[in-house]
Length: 427
Image (cartoon, rainbow, N blue to C red; front, side):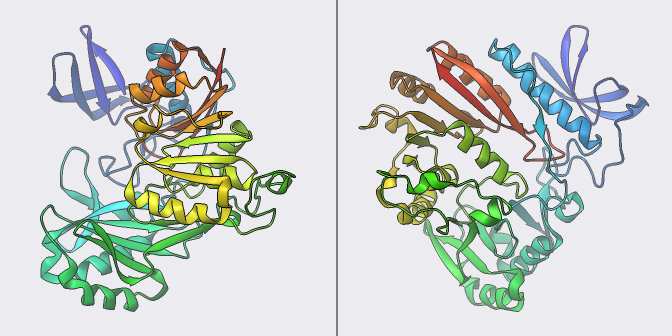
């Protein structure tokens, strides 16, 4: 939260706008102080008792009533666009809410003296992941059991990445060694631990010399369209329209397969709503999907009848993307290359829409410059970071694009993070 003291900006953790608190300054730089609340003098009516230490990863807003969290995230977006992009957002903007418990499909947990959990903010001390409620108790127990099977080698394990499907019927535990270490010597013990876990663990994987090695079970989880969209699949007759490119027609099974190291949106309750929002904004015949990942948006767009060029540079994600694209034939073409390189090469068939879902750092200046030169009528920008989204919105505005709509999704309850879909039209 933001305060000011004698002209200096002070970021205060553990507070709520409108409160009067006593805060201790913990670190400083030339422009800014960073402080933590030590006493609440006048409490907000939105204050609540957090379920765990708010410094435990993913809990920095846990002391705030959930409805107020969503309102604050809307303010974060509005402020970023106004202050950094000099752009006013639609008054209708709201933030789609999520259940606060067991929402995470992916979580990176760190081992420490017989337990695993998140890091406390700004430290490498481990706190109890189960207390935060972000992942299910089954997931924490499964990862703990697998990590324990490493025995003396546990000190060589940096993290256990838990990856589940939306229905929680598949769960892979992916082990990440510390730099320079290898964990494959414990493969037999890990496989035995996975078998002993029964259906709680459907696969164990690790990296060996940079390659993904499956130690037990399946190395991937699979989501069906029915599960992702909670029974309301938005693919209509367009998938079999006359003259459409080859691929499955309506009713065909649409799935997303992904290995644990591949990025995927983390909120099981809102991932379908996010995809539905992109489908609505990017409805067109020819679409380019930049930063395509495993094909979360590409597969949905192809299933809805679009011809899609999916661009992705990460090796693990590309393998999953190719698996997911195979059923669509020439309707979904994969380009395994960095987005920056692809942006310098206009697609052979002029795109109607470009979808881009960059990392938290946003799209590079080269990418913005490249796709602006394509003169595509519409851009659909998915972002997990309001400041970089606003920065890129300003860059696009300077190149002839205007913001036409903005949707927001609370993919990470109890944190300040907010996901957004910003749509830009040319001219």
